[in-house]
Length: 213
Image (cartoon, rainbow, N blue to C red; front, side, top):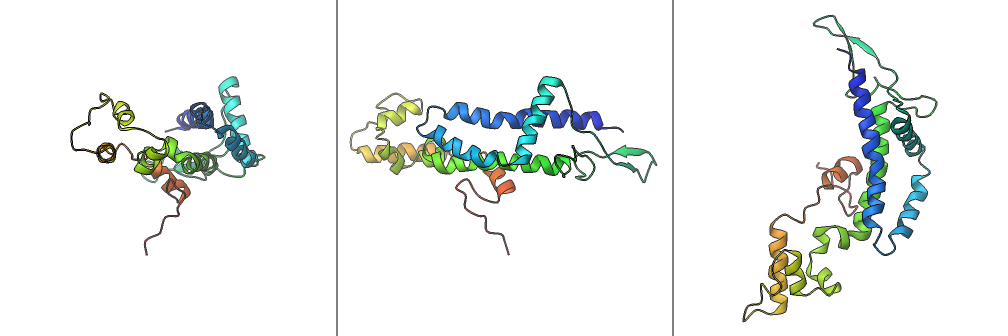
């Protein structure tokens, strides 16, 4: 079965979605102090990546001109039926992009591109974790630094202000209760951490994963 068209569709979808990563990041972070300066520093080394630059060009040509860059494939004989089948992304040597620009097959080149973008997101967790990461945000130390009151926390949780104001409970005890309640809901889990592990070999804080002996 010829899956070239299917592969082209998947690759074009990847180009479009991946290009949105830095655009969305800039939009959601635009009001955070110093972010623009930090991001410009990141783009300095991003621009040094030939792969990233070419993928941006691929995306633009794909979206605006309808071009597709899955241009070649290896054919293999199915041992059972004798029919010739087209390999897809699972065989990394089978699909290739312009060799004059990127001397890698599509899967490896796409992985390099995605990893470069993911590294920016991971660094954002390190730099702005107490703002964007619930796990780092909802700590006693952080809410004290932000001068959040119990009422502020209650309101952010969707409860009436003063909901935990009970005789005999101090402000600190109320805060500890509220934070414990938030963290017990697994609301502080980082959905991107599995990607950081798999592609970068680090957790969201950039700490290297210890390999099992």
